[in-house]
Amino acid sequence: SWPSSPAAGERLYVKSQQPPIWAEVVGVVGNQRQALPFGREQGTIYFPGLLSRPTVNWVVRGSGSSSALAKPVSDLIGAIDPQITVADVERLADIVERSHAPVRFTATLIGAFGALALTLASCGLFGVLSYNVAQQRNEFGIRVALGATRSRILWPVLSRAVALAAAGVALGALASVPTLRLIEDQLVGVSALDPTSYAAAGIGFLVVALLSALAPAMWAADGNPSEALRPE
Image (tube, rainbow, N blue to C red; front, side, top):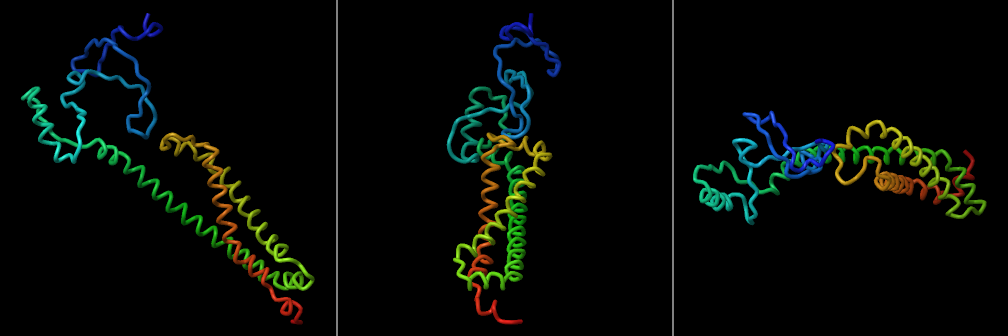
């Protein structure tokens, strides 16, 4: 017997209707996101429109603005049943846009804070490397005097920047794991552990780190050997 047998054709006692009714199952659908496209998927029961509630939402295919469609839709519904009153006409695109607004605002806010954090990190990395280059100015000058090539001077500075950035990416990835459950309901079409997203973020941060280290590395490579060998 049901629920072990196929649901189609069986009857379901629905207490949520006033008064409660026996409804025949005519088909089975998968779980749905009630706050499309966000929120958890939940079991959903669909009823004929006239049984579900006094207010019914109708979907009408059309083109143009909602104000331009209001009168034709009202006339169409009135021709079917003059007792039905059309309270409001909205485009589906406007409804979807409105439902996305809170999440879009949150995403924009998070993105702004992320950009700010990235800017601060790049400035901090620039400052640390600039300080290290200034402290090693004599060393770099002596290397140039002894015939070190430009690449041999650039590489230590750039590799230090990559090492610091890689450590930051690794620590950031580990720190993000406990917070994944807070954002997984807001993701559509992508997993919270999507490797492509993590790889793109890591590579992006490494690129920013290299750009931040480029100026200090150039300063180190352009060191004047005569200044390095000049007695203090």
